[in-house]
Amino acid sequence: MFDNLTDRLSKSIQKIRGQANLTEENVKEALREVRVALLEADVALPVVKSFIDDVKERALGKEVMLSLKPAQVMVKVVQEELIKVLGEATAGINFNAQPPVVILMAGLQGAGKTTTTGKLAKYLQERENKKVMVVSADVYRPAAIEQLQTVAEQVGATWYPSSVIDDPIAIGMSALQAAKKGYFDVLIVDTAGRLAVDEAMMKEIKSLQNSINPTETLFVVDAMTGQDAANTAKAFADALDLTGVVLTKIDGDARGGAALSVKTITGKPIKFQGVGEKMEALEPFHPDRIASSILGMGDVLSLVEEVERKIDKKEAEKLAKKVAKGDKFSLEDYQAQLLQMQNMGDMSAMLDKIPGMSNLSENIKEQVNDQASSKATGRKIAIVNSMTIKERRYPQLIKGSRKRRIANGSGTSIQDVSKVLKEFSQMQKMMRKLKGKGMMKMMQKLGGKLPGGPGGMPF
Image (cartoon, rainbow, N blue to C red; front, side, top):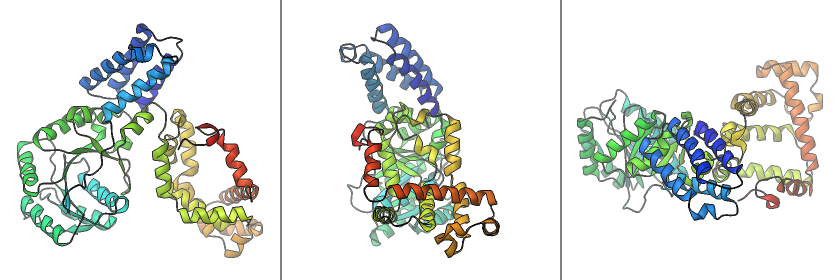
C-alpha cells in the first residue's frame, strides 16, 4: 500500500531537503507535487485541498522559517498533517461495556465482511484473550451462513446457527441471548451486503442495530475502490451510528487513497486493516506508523510486533543458548530456522517496515522474496526431511548417490541439495564465530550501523 504515493512524496521532499532555505516559492513548488501525488493516489479532492492548505500554512509559518533545519521541520509538518488526516490516535475495540460486547459488521457485498468477521474473531481471541461467538444475519447471499460457519471453525470461534428462513433481527436477538447465557465476551454479527447502497438494506440494518444495540458498528470497505470507498463509507455513516471502519484488501492497493480519505469524510476512525488473505492478516490501524511508512521512514514498531508474534521464542532461546555454549550448529537447527522463516511470510512487506528500505528497487525486493519465499523455504525443508538422521548429524557423508536419493525424495534437483548444504555450511561457520562472547561482539559491531546509532534499533 502507498507505494506510488511514497515514491512521489519522497521525490518532492528530497527537493525541499536540497534547499538551503525555505521560501514561499519552493514550498509552493513542493506542495504542487504533493497535491499531484495525492490526487494520483485517488485521495478525495476535499481531503487533498484541506491537507495542502494546512501544510502550506504551517510550512510558511515561524515554526519552519525560523528553524535551523527548515527542511527537516517541513518533513515533520507533513508527517503530523498526515497523522491528522489518518486519524491521530490508534482506535481499538471498545470493551468498556457489559459483556457480551456486540460488534455489528456492515458494508457492501464483496467487501469481505464474512472473512473479516473471522479474522476479527481470531484477532480478539489470540491478542485480546476474548471468548468470541459469531453469527450470520445474511439470509440473502447463497451459502453466506455456511461460509461463516467454515470460517468460524477455521479460527476456533463459536458459531451460532442461523437459517435463510429466519428474520435477521430475530437472528441477532437470539444470538445475543445465547452469548449472554454462554458468558461470551464478544458477539460478532455478520450482516447482508448489497451490490450498491439501497434504502431497503439500510432500513433492515438500522432495525437490526436498534434491536441488538451494538457497542461497535464497523463499516467494512474494500480499499482498492479508492474514492468510492470513502463515498460509500459516508453513505453508511449518514444512515448508521458507525463507530469505525475496517479497510480490506489494503495489501493490493498501491495508491492508498481510501485510507487517506475515509477518516476525514466519515469522521470515524479506521480501526483495522486487512493485509492479506490468511486469517491472521488483520492488523490494528496505527495512523502515526502509517504516516511514517508513507514518508519512507519505515515502521519499526510494527515490524518488531510482527516478529515477536511469528517467532517461536522458546526455539530462538534454545538456539541462542546452544550457540553461546559452543555446541555444534546442526542440520536440525538449520531446519528449525527454516520453519521460523516460513512463518514470517512475505519478506518484501517486512522490508518496507525498515527505515529507508522502502526505496529499494522492485527487482531487489523480488530477489529477496524469491530467496525467502514460502515456496523456496518449503523446498529446503523438504530436502532436509529427505535426509536420514545420520546424514543430518554428519552432513559430510552426503555425496553423489546420497545427494541423488535426497533430491528424488524431496522432488528437487542435485543442485538444490548442494545449495542447501552450502548454505548450511555458511551458517555453521557464522554460528561458530558467535561462540561465547562472539554474539555480544557481533551485536556491538552491528549497533553502530543500525538506525539509532551505537544503541542499535530505536526501540
